[in-house]
Length: 196
Length: 195
Image (cartoon, rainbow over all chains, first blue to last red; front, side, top):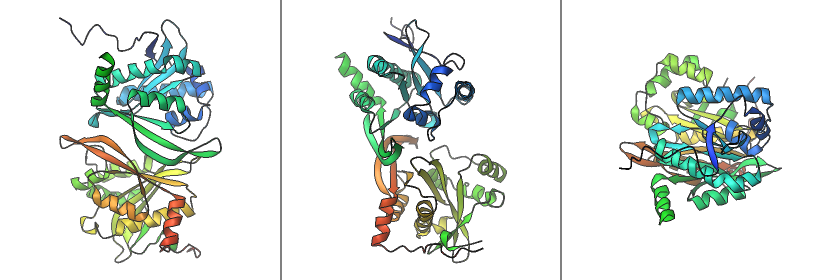
């Protein structure tokens, strides 16, 4: 008989895999990404301050240590299967176990990688979130100028719940910030539609 | 010590002193209804010493005790934290710990004073807050202070064996200015500061 707890990898997809984030090996790429205002804000929740590799290494060690000790965060590096290079990240920065909710972040370094692999990364992340972390609800943030990200999350079934007017300042102007969420029931409904 | 900037019609905002105020704040926590209105986390009890440590180490940047003008009694707290200095936004939190002081306009008055400070001294562009769907009294108070509804986080809370929503509200400086152009500002600009 099929045992649903076995035989399916939570981490390995068709083209990409979720792997450990490595403070030593991934810090150069991560440091480069801290120059991206959107990524910087989602990780550090502060105004843009690009960080050099040596600082990033320490920060990553702190983040991973805290995630391990407090069980409130999970971080994955996304890599093409068999390749050592980190092309993206998927992370649950604030898992609220009491309420079975979490926020989720998805980042890809390059547009081509986003186009080719973000959907699969999000699919793996949501399966992990709902079926392993047993979440009831997954929330993501988006800005008005993140066209591809907005398209992806809306296609995936996320609902726009909050529009924080002018809560982000970038490129010399204010942007609205959106909060989206997907409930487990909605995700399961969508899965059955895809299969059918 | 006191001055007009931090004084409203019913209350004034005293600078929160963790050493002096933590006994009272710890006592308010004994009221579980208060905790459920205030915090999404599990209601928990902390000694005055732990409350003091929390304020000293990780508490919000700007915390005030709400004190009545009549009788100078501490009835609650209000705080501003989570600053984003490029968007010039922050998050406000407020609690009226004394049961008999709820529903009397003290919270709304304290919020008016805080927003005046946020917009005219800190030069914020926007102030955010979250409120739970079962806290109708607070939602009315925030609306009176000028906050606008910006969305609902569905089923964000799991307590009492069911799910509850969280409401998001925000106020822009322009909202606040418009409101007070219509309803003249009750708080005078702090021209005369006490030395």
